[in-house]
Image (cartoon, rainbow, N blue to C red; front, side, top):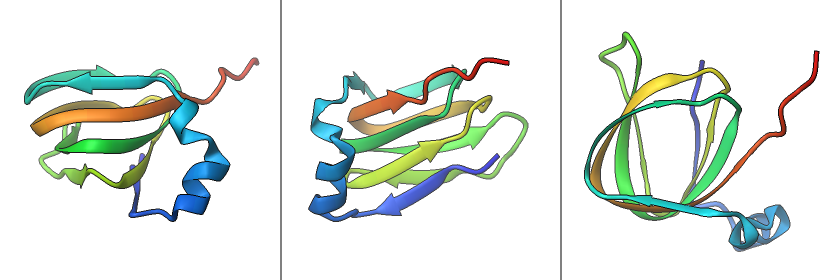
Amino acid sequence: MNIIVEHNPSSIKLSELGIMSWPKWSCQPGKYALVFEERETCYLVKGKVKVYPKGSSEFVEFGAGDLVTIPKGLSCTWDVSLFIDKHYKFDPPTSL
């Protein structure tokens, strides 16, 4: 399961994705255990975080200005070092 980070995407791409109309989520610095039931795409307006997939000592780091895709089914810990403010959207659930 790979987290995809695109650093500083163009304003054209952000506009095409409609990011500013996506819901917002924020959190204070700290550690958070999260499970992603669906694939999430998010754009960080503020903040910095290291994401540690469950069972791994390796991490992916991203922050303000990054467009991030988090895979469906990922269990991880977010180690937030700077207050997070992000726009996000989940892919719609797929039916079997």
